[in-house]
Length: 143
Image 1 (cartoon, rainbow, N blue to C red):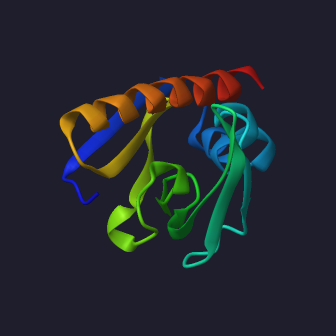
Image 2 (spheres, rainbow, N blue to C red; image 1 turned 90 degrees about the vertical axis):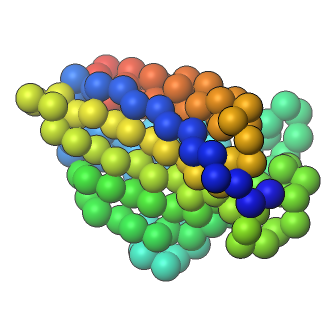
């Protein structure tokens, strides 16, 4: 699957970075914005992260590891999904990078996903991530 295309989604959230960070790392909030996914991790750099749920009627268990964990600033994890049909190998993983930036009292949230094999695949991923970051925004601004 090795690819050079990156899917990126950016949104401005009218909440401080500390609030957005709490949404990104709280299992109950993750379940709300990540399509019902249950997440299991201790957020330790080098530690595992597992996402479980049902997508299009199929149960899944995606996995990865935490690469960076900078509260209020940056979260980087690897991600592999068996639903991709690819072999569970490092070259078939994506890296998801969540970056939070200060925007005059608001937070600019950017999510990028690397290792897409084509522009079309990156565009498809971007559409999914656009929906997801909008949900993060709604949760962070509402609660």
